[in-house]
Image (tube, rainbow, N blue to C red; front, side):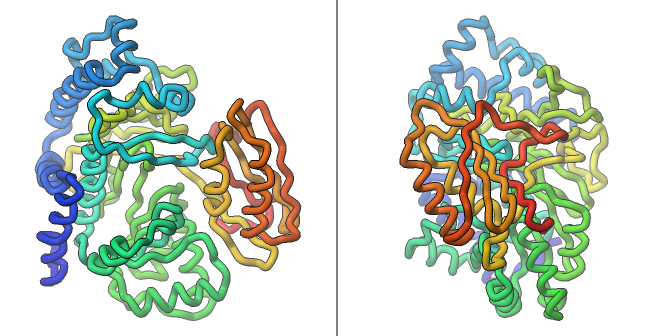
Length: 454
């Protein structure tokens, strides 16, 4: 059972709920419901999914122009669904579809949409919108998973992250909010020895209850602490939450050993939502109240539990900008088992998801690959990309461009890459008709041949 101090109780029970209400989010109500439904049997959860799916698709068919036309064309009647698997009657959705129908995918009565973008695990930039309902459900899903591990909002945490959203929008209000929530940000991009020393000192001073960040970044900090003889195993850290990349066994072992805490894996993204979280018993639980997961083969056919294929998600809280049968590009397997924790939520296993390499600057500074990705993903006309660091002196950028590509983008790419990698680095830009996949079938959108830092 979770034991909270008075401050954490105040933040999680009063301050954060008020914060969410002021933002017109209904996160607290969603959390309370999720903490009940997680204990339903798999059969009851499937029934709940079907009920929600029908209502969701009826709503989408009435208010989203793209799906209104699609349902009409296919004579698709959401009311006639008898099982969540009936989703297979609808086409799969790739990033290209969203890019081409950005306006038609917005509900005609949507209010308060927020614009997001992502490079995605495939290296295909994507712009999309998220409504308040979706945000409420995503925050609630993460909050629930946090509480599984005996920690809560208001407990001191260190977030090791690199998104421009987090790093670029740190205005006074956000800084005050983070201070009240006792959330401390460490930039994951620059991993020089000097910076790593500072990060470790910060962790030692704050003594967080939880860590949150990229597994590769946490692993890098842990390894540096070990190599320099700095102790991080006596700080009282309860759990390290990792997400946004594939978690490797050697990373988990090192993080657990150095920080003296379990590692909780999470899988998802800004586009697809918080798909699955790991509980203390080890199960990767799908957020099944909100998300229906399908596994498909190369031909798009749905595979049964136990077989590996591409992960496809339908997020039931996205009526303002629907994600229906959205192809993640990641590979995984649905389990036929239930978790020993007693929750009836479906389990994901063998997730071969997002893998982001580090790159190394000329001066030896280790940078998270996302430091380069964010340069490319917002440029107009960049349909897909891949970054290959051949050496400290040479980096190749492969780009698939469309009609909106601007010639002055090349100068900007070189300028921004040199800022990060070094003024003398040769930045070569090549245009391709397509970006080839790895042998595994996955895209890797940052590859460094300088040194294996994973």
